[in-house]
Image (cartoon, rainbow, N blue to C red):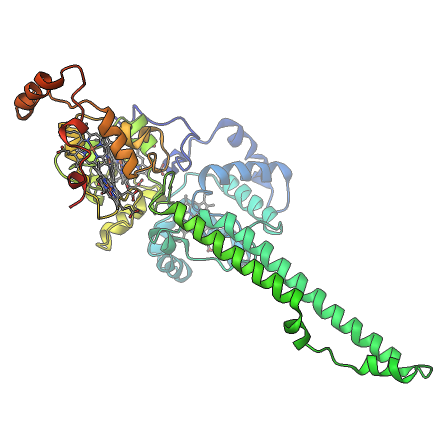
Length: 424
Ligand code: HEC
Ligand code: HEC
Ligand code: HEC
Ligand code: HEC
Ligand code: HEC
Ligand code: HEC
């Protein structure tokens, strides 16, 4: 199944496979020898070839200025000689096994994650390094930020990649604050210089002199009715806004789409690979709740499929550490209401898509339905009972038909909108 149903290249964000290395596209391979003679000096052809090789093989784990799964690449030529880098990329575990102190320390620092081996030629590796060197100077989004240890953060739910957007916002804010502080300081300095100049002048009369020496009285700000009025109004408006937002949002989280600790895609698994929902959500036809699969279920396939992928490595790590994967719950109705999956999937024969929407097209799951009381009750009013082949309903159907056969026998005509059915 896995081989047959491989997604089209590029369709899944991180589907670039380290094992594809060696079958690098012809164009790249052709461009690389140009760099063969060259060292790490800026040869545009070598840099272009290195760029393509880096994006195809390394970018899923490395960035130039930021720790992703592996270390940031910037400054690598200063840290290590080419005579170390080349064997490392060809087979890092061999370098670690040889007892090389730097390699062993690095390997331990990155939680003993093995970097895959690459069947790249010396020339190709040289061109990758040339590309890295050419990128080093360029200011990128990640520059200047203390790199978080990606591999650690990932399991805790903060994918390093997601930090990029917010960290650029943070940089912007920090820059703005710094600029403001500099402005204020400059203004104060200018004001003082001007005062000094004025003090030096002889032709000032007593009143002017008084004004120069007068200290600014801060209490005037508090006393001013205008200032008090503005602050008061803003405060009241803010409280009002929060209250209204809060009241409108009680229990409402339609569209909620949290970032999950592992980039698990329903589109890839349930959609393209057609894995049955109940293969993973095993209790959805049998029990009250649909379970979230344990890492062992993932391992049924991923002990063989995509074993080198950094996302899959996170499953391994969870199992090694005997810690559950910290999936973020998407759907959650409050405890005061009772909802039972098997009643709806098994008994009523409803499809998952009715309530959860097109899960098999979702890269990341979001809450499709409102999950409000009104939503439950509307459906109960409209949906006829699935009575076929269900002996429990035989007598009830007869009773209903004899009384008012014209009206469909809905969930609600069977008492499905009584408060006690959902609340007790
Ligand atoms: C699957 C993830 C992964 C891929 C793909 C990967 N690396 Fe690495 N790399 C790592 C990790 C993790 C380390 C840290 C050492 C360790 O744990 O083995 C590392 C370390 C390195 C180092 C040493 C860095 C230092 O600071 O000393 C270099 C150089 C390097 N990688 C280059 C590359 C290049 C070039 C490629 C692409 C051809 C590549 N890596 C692909 C995960 C990866
Ligand atoms: C290969 C295993 C697998 C298959 C197959 C699968 N799921 Fe999931 N499902 C998961 C995992 C893991 C999660 C938790 C992570 C997430 O929310 O993406 C999940 C989460 C969900 C959630 C959100 C749960 C919550 O937190 O509220 C819904 C709804 C869901 N799946 C429905 C479906 C439906 C419908 C299908 C079939 C079309 C399906 N799943 C097929 C593994 C699977
Ligand atoms: C029935 C088999 C099967 C099960 C069970 C399964 N997967 Fe997968 N998974 C696949 C296939 C097939 C692919 C696509 C492989 C490819 O792109 O070559 C895949 C790909 C992935 C990828 C993308 C990897 C990458 O880097 O491109 C992730 C992440 C993933 N699975 C996570 C999970 C998790 C988490 C679970 C358990 C909740 C799970 N899988 C259970 C078959 C499975
Ligand atoms: C009648 C609507 C409905 C149908 C049909 C339905 N679900 Fe749900 N599902 C819900 C509601 C409501 C919740 C939230 C339950 C809660 O918070 O207790 C939920 C929650 C979930 C969860 C999160 C775990 C849990 O039980 O809280 C998963 C996984 C899930 N559904 C999978 C499925 C799958 C797979 C199917 C199809 C076989 C399916 N659902 C069919 C309404 C539905
Ligand atoms: C898409 C339609 C649909 C939605 C949405 C829906 N239900 Fe239902 N529900 C049904 C059907 C159909 C039945 C009848 C199943 C049967 O034959 O017993 C049912 C039955 C029930 C029953 C058992 C009623 C009885 O008479 O024994 C309860 C309790 C229930 N639903 C709770 C809920 C709650 C709570 C929600 C909202 C979170 C909800 N349902 C949302 C269709 C729906
Ligand atoms: C089909 C199931 C169902 C039936 C029948 C039902 N409720 Fe609810 N009720 C829910 C669900 C689900 C919620 C939680 C969703 C939400 O907060 O919007 C809820 C929430 C509530 C709340 C709390 C609202 C809040 O925001 O905390 C009250 C009060 C309530 N219901 C009263 C009633 C009364 C009274 C009846 C009978 C006339 C009734 N319900 C019948 C499903 C039902």
